[in-house]
Amino acid sequence: MAVRGPALTFDPRYVDFVISAWHPRSFVALSTEELEHLATAQAEQVFTELAMIGLAEEHAKLAAIRSAITLLKALKFVKQTNSGTGAGRIARLAATQVGRAVLAEEPAAGHIRVGLVGRLIESSPPLATLLYLLEGHGPIARPVAHPLPGTPRKGAAFNRAVLEGLATYGGPSALPTQGSKGPAARQTPLQQLKGMAAQATQRHPASGLPSFEKVLSLAVGLGLVWRDVDQINQALGIECIGPAVITRDGSLKPHVPAWRDIQTRFQDALLRVYQQRVDSSGFVTIEGLRGGIGRELRLSALVVDAFLDLAREAGDRGAWPFTLQFEPDDELLYAADRRPLIWHGAAFDFVEIRRIADAAPARSTSSTPRHTGGSSSP
Image (cartoon, rainbow, N blue to C red; front, side):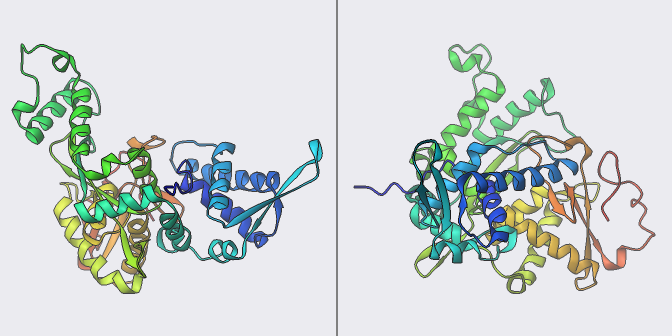
């Protein structure tokens, strides 16, 4: 009989909420209701803090907390015991000996819990298969809507740019011509994009996995893949997704190197990607920077963001020959799809690199930040 593994219906953030809420109590046995209450409070605190710095408002979901607890039980990190009968029945949760050791591990860069995620990969055939197929067959590549900052995100100009981008991507023959008939001729530009993206996805062997998109989304949230976008035009790009894992002792683990071991390579990659993607204002998007670095060094966005924070600190104390300047994009405030860099309790969407010699007050553009309003980063 095939091994099914744990249900992949959980949100990785809620797994962290449960662990973070339980850890201060040394993972002592608690009633299910009490642990759910503690995790809910932890989630609400995090979501409130994120909303205060410009992310979309969220509230804790009890169903997501219960799914996280179910995962920990499936991994044998937590066991449940029941006492009493009828209305007085009480379910209590306690960490197992193995679970206590894994759950108490200090998270690595990007707040990735390496032991837990490694155990999950071992226990989940769909997740492991996805990663092995990405390793063996290369990244997934497919067209996606990807408007550049400051360009239309909808309307006639956007639709026109999408069609032009699709023609560049798939060739003119890939699109219905004027006067053609049939369902394809009546599709909107975004519908045509969706169809071409599905075709591109199906060319990768990993697409044959059951619930492929769900497993892929989970791999992103767990820090197991990198994601980058090659821009075609101002509205369209090619999304590339590849593995951010290493093989250790015959098992796949998330690739989370120590900063001391990778900082020289990270500095080189940071400068190279910045020079390739910087715009006329001197800034590059966080998304573009994390994607390019992640692709080159096989690091997930979670890890790249953690290392960008360390790079900023290295520049600020003069350990590197340049400094990083972070700026927010006020147009993205509270947007549901905003994925900013979090640094010192604030959210940022753009990065500028300043050489130490050029970071003097004489810089003429320093009074004109990249964002549309508000104050610049510290």
